[in-house]
Length: 330
Picture 1 (cartoon, helix red, strand yellow):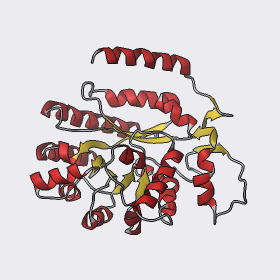
Picture 2: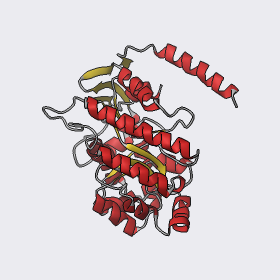
Picture 3: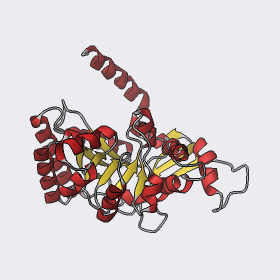
Picture 4: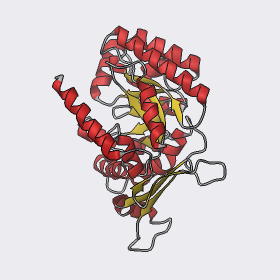
């Protein structure tokens, strides 16, 4: 269902951090199957954590390793894998060391929630005498292939570590607001040269909605004159740069690149050019509907009608049925 919604919203590439502690083994292959059926592409990982016990953590490590190896063997620019980690405060040194070893052995990057809340920093300083980014750096988790999600509560030294290692930061404004954890200073991070992308943390697949939230929160944190360019660049430029660390040829209209397009039904009420495009994007285009979605040259939606070999009503009915069964268990 969220993949179908992604098509409707013009989202062609997803980087997902999956968790299903009572159904770990084979879970990423199941997600992959759904992604392929909808014609999208995705970089997947399983979030390793000790919060459900050591055996679950080990199973999560094996799930990541097996999936990454399988995706590397296929190498079809549709599915790729990162090594997933939940967050510093739920991962022991032993588990983090093993995950780092297995990830590096595969040449994979890591995907981890980083200093999303103050609790992550407080636990790290109390138990490890380090800041979160420092701990991740010491274990070799940071790097050009890795994604540090959130980074709401990091200091200047941690920003420097992220920059020096080439680690990408992904800002998730709606999630941060929903969880009341604070506002990441993406303006400061961008000024330091950190590659900052825009994500959703599963709040939505509508990136335009996330863009507007990012701008408003930067206004709230700093002032109303800041945040436009940082948020716009995160979505339109940096997300493609981050995705190209796991895939090839995304984000540009060039020969040899993937033909990914979202055609939006927007008639500008005032003249539009490079000087005022950000304003049109945030206040106009973002409020318009997607007419056509194309991924890797395949038309997935045209004229606002899905072109998928999927019965959406059947999928929705099955979802309702499974949800009702699940709720009865609790």
